[in-house]
Length: 587
Image (cartoon, rainbow, N blue to C red; front, side, top):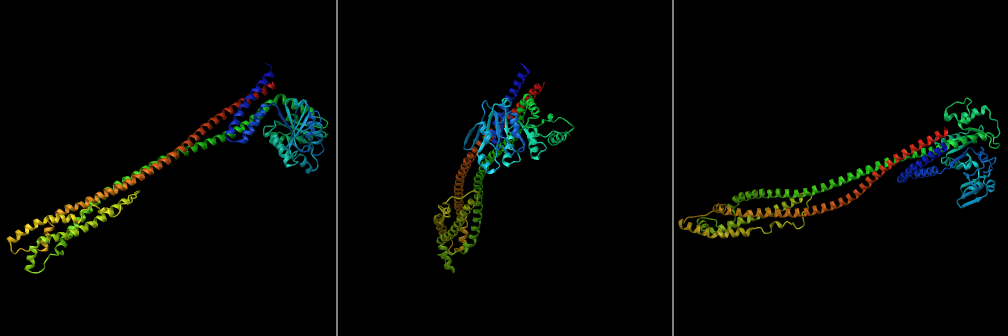
């Protein structure tokens, strides 16, 4: 294989690998919604795949750019004039048959080369220019020039520092080019033009500087001036008679062609030796810069999704904790009901014993002075009558005591029933169900009727006791104290046993109340738990979907980051191959 063939093979391999890497970067950019990077990389890939090499002429208006292009193309291709002439960016490419095409908003217009040269130039009146060129989108010219046959595309630009819109047009087009002819009028090295040239160099664009002499002699002072303005700022090297051509600076008279051979030789050497390497490296530099930007975006996006996944996991844990809290709260309500029921039952028992003690003490004081309908007051006859009437007096004493005791325990029962309901309602989270009214506590209680039935059953024995007393002692008497003492003996003991039914009834009522409240609490707890569980399950499903999406996105972004790393490696290899291609060509 010849050296040239080997070089071409290496270039094609470097170009192919670089194109694949840039395509990968463009795919990542599209996934990251970075439209600007995707467009730039797509254009770079297309430009890299195509062999066409873009060379632009730029400079101030009337510096001789169009004249220089005509000289390079060895023919009159683009319009020239003494004033600003070029209205828009003009693309000039190789064509077997010359043509000109004006691309406008309202449709393309085909021209002959003669029509183009004669009519596609600026007028001295801006209003006329706006009317003629306002709708122009692009201008394409094709000519069978030998220079263009070497896969070269030339761009003629409107002069910089002419109008802002034309200046921006030139700057934007420059960034899409591989090299540029920076054209200056001899002695006129404007700051804006030098700044544009410096920015182009920093962007990796090869610059060939042309000082158009317009027939003026090239003196040493003019060489030194050109060096100090155009070379020194970029290199820091003072002028000591060096060759400006080595710095790609050429003095050319575009009209006569003087100095054009040196410029063409410099261009030819570049096209034959450095062009492919520069072509690849130009877009590799863009790709590497974009890759760094994409990796930052990719990592930031992955970090965002990791944080979102962490938040989703935390939310899931919070939901689990919320459900646990609800379960604990509802179980706590039921535990509270059971605790309150036990405490209330203990209170009923304590209060019953206390109330029973109070009633006993009060009976000892009340019964000796109780009002009895059959009681006779007075002397011996009254006492004998009371003795003989002891059965009736005993019954009346029992009725008086029974009424008093029944009323006391009725009130006590109602008060305790109210206390039961109050305690049930005080349990946190409990709402007593409707129907637990204040009368429920007395339903079915053995009140006065039971007491009277017990007293009446005792009367036969009382009569028998009185008959024996009368027979044995004709002077027997009876007092209310005697009746009270008798009543507070065995009858009262028996009655106290029966009064325990009040206690048992209140305990049953308390059990019923707390069971009703507990049942209602359980229903509410079950409903609350079911509602909470359903809501949490719905939210958990949604969070799980989000979590899975975030995790999948993190995985995808990690893969993209790996793709970016592989692309960076491929770009490095392509750059190395391109550099090796250049070294082999130089050898």
